[in-house]
Image (cartoon, rainbow over all chains, first blue to last red; front, side, top):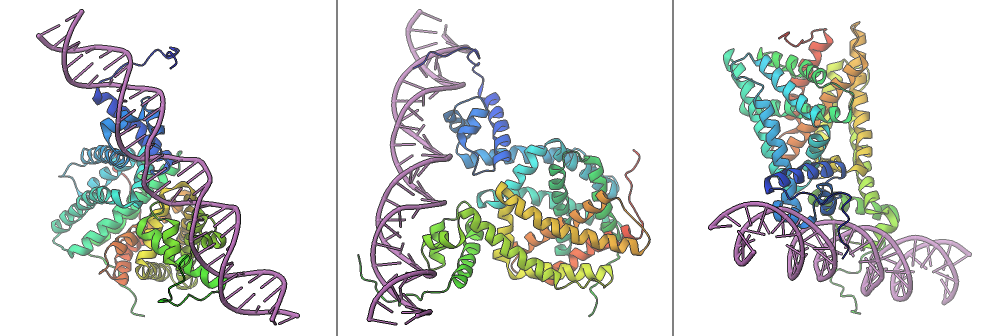
Length: 216
Length: 216
DNA sequence: GAGCATACCTACCCGTGCGTAAGGTTACGC
DNA sequence: GCGTAACCTTACGCACGGGTAGGTATGCTC
């Protein structure tokens, strides 16, 4: 056994809570760069400046680790959004603030979030976790639309509402992808562009304007 | 070595072109059910009623095989869409037909397409292939919007145009996901709902109406 | 300063599955 | 009928990486 060469002077022992965060940071980084399967536990451990068994001891299996990442990131994101939209503003204002927060978050965590998110869409084990999160978002958006509709004395079928909300959320996710791939792009501008499609359309719907397929 | 038990009477030898299609069918099926990594070449070969080395002989590596699947499916889809939208119709009619074709295709290939597509989003090697396809779609949509704009004497910055197109394509992809997950849902209805958000918004934009962030 | 818990390590096992080597069999041309 | 090329097989090599066994150091408590 080699005596430890102390050029880097024997790293400190740290309390569990701190190490766990470091591990999660490393995991998010590696998972997003390499993808879930290509990422190796060794590399994650290495990047966290720790050895593999520690990761297993603290965060468990590779899958569990990934879920932990997903969980932390999605929680942070939901908090960012929830903190932005006060419930008693007009609908467009709320939507605008929500979008700004959303794109702001993604813009600030390009690496982390968007790619991590892209990973999760494929593989069964994570679909549940992700679907739950998307569900919460859809619910929020649908609630918002419904609220605005009722305020103007209108109503829409539940499925229609869900699908429209789903479409809006989907468009946002896609633009988030776009944002993550364009490092020079501005989050605020992206949010504005999103509003320009989403809100103009939604606003028409809220006013009772609808489009019908041509009879042909 | 066992003599071949001929309950299934010694399958025919088939020409390459036919076998290749069978293999691709099997590959699409297995990849979509299991995901790229979980799928094994043995299983694909098995499902195609052939042995593994044949797959390697004809379609190459696992990655190459997956790309071949992606390629075939995306080509089919683009053809379905291209065949639907005649270039000299009014913008909304073209958009409508394009969307109908798109959702129709996805609805008819739920298994195949949507899940396969979801797979590709994650892993680096396929990102290129997928980005190319999405690029073609975005280009088509952007071209359509631009055309409609010019016809009414307006113009938009190139980036704005791209982002809006990207958002529309993204929303469609998301609704396609939704459609793939809801076996009872109707493709035509979904297309109509999509139109109700997308077109009403795009139409406003085409008329020169825009939304601006509140000064606050 | 003994004892205990917690942080941490090196080294290994072993399943899984991609990719291939080497050989058998059927059909078609001549 | 017979060669030859295309079709198809069984059986294996081998690397990679998830997960663990078992042992060492460090700091905290009394």
